[in-house]
Image (cartoon, rainbow, N blue to C red; front, side, top):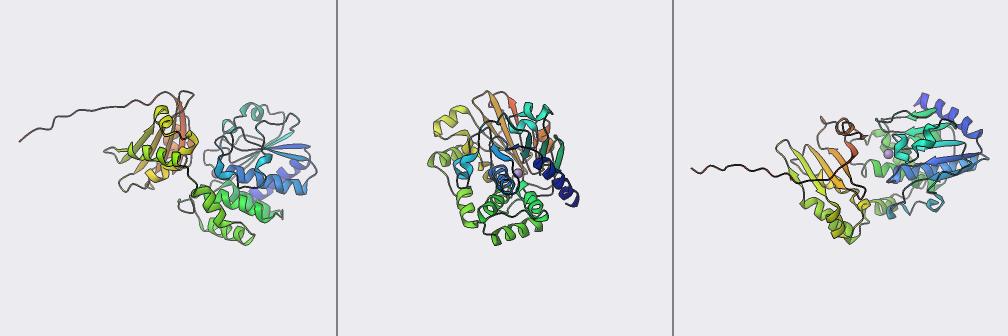
Length: 319
Ligand SMILES: [Mn+2]
């Protein structure tokens, strides 16, 4: 953490010398990437004279609209940008603006907690032991005495809640729980986060999850695989974004060593999500074989193609 703090101080110097910083979140935004961007925007706005814009290429899901100032998030990088801060984005592609990041004309600050982060950018602040990017930010803000209000504490805690699955995933460390306690002390709205992030489902979404759960098949290696085709998705009238979260239910299966969810998207790609049910499985290594990545216990990939059913036949001998 010590080196990260001194790197952060260097980053603050770069930010101080910029007129217009863009704070980038990853595509298919979650509470960690958005919570991080909004918190950074607030803190920097208070401290530095330049202007700060949050940018996310994809629209926010309804569950994140309780985070204050979310209406200030733009879809495109402003042309006058002279500094980029990427938050919770393991690769430049994750931002949907890889060209801007790789042009190398402007400084890029990369703050993240993914083990698979490719360390792009001029300044990298990466801690794979942190449960969320917001957990890293909490420590950076504390160390540099950057103060913030209770609604920013809510943004930071929302990131932790999201990435630990309400403190149920194995990335929940002593440090994570301590940080969550500190954020609650600073006025973070714990109940609101739990309700907005986890207990808001449409009927269509429940129907979609029902289809995913009933499509689940367990193979003889202990892998639970489910799928959803574009046609099945249409039948439920839910949006593909509403798939988020269902894999954690699949991964509840007692028999499953690992879980895979395959879903077709409208661009002719298959989105794959994997979760490890047991400690000895590294799903990020598996997803990397398909050009994806993520964490040891939760990872994903995208490949062009369609899902096809495979049938096998066998003879059942009669006595
Ligand atoms: Mn994250």
